[in-house]
Length: 232
Image (cartoon, rainbow, N blue to C red):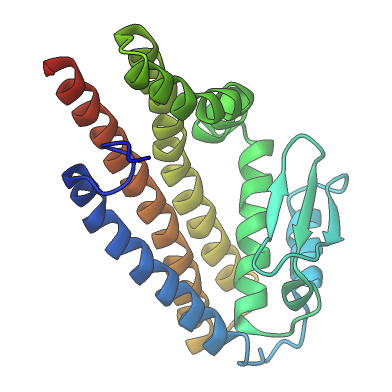
């Protein structure tokens, strides 16, 4: 059975620019990470050692560091106060490992200093998870049943996911700035090593920009679909 608007539809063209940027951003992070995970740093410290030193220097002795099995799944969990590093970052003695480890420490320091965008993102995360999962189902039900209220609620719910992505941008860029400053001032990295870490973190940041543009584009598409079906 063919459902207009959910298979081929002209409104899919709204997503095309964001999709192109997303593919480009993924290519950039993959290539930057591949290059700089092969560049050994002169200081000879692993990513986990970089992270532990940064955390201790910030007085964050209670923040744990764990090895995490997912490739490029490195993250800071504010609820558990733990930094999880992929094996290549945890054990790596490379520019990429140091940069990524320091970036996650940047999030822990944000948490410590009550950095407003991180606080807001953490508080709305549970509601956003529920709303984003329900949004498309509500929208589809509204369209198929001809119920504008359900469709509008779906759009509102999806808007929360878009807001979350927008709030994520300053969180990620700020964490990278903190990381690069610490890596240089604490002399974990030297000269071209700093430039390499910056390239890795900038490429990673572009994936968040791409995700935000995709979310905004999808929201515009839902609004366009809703208006079209209401006109009919």
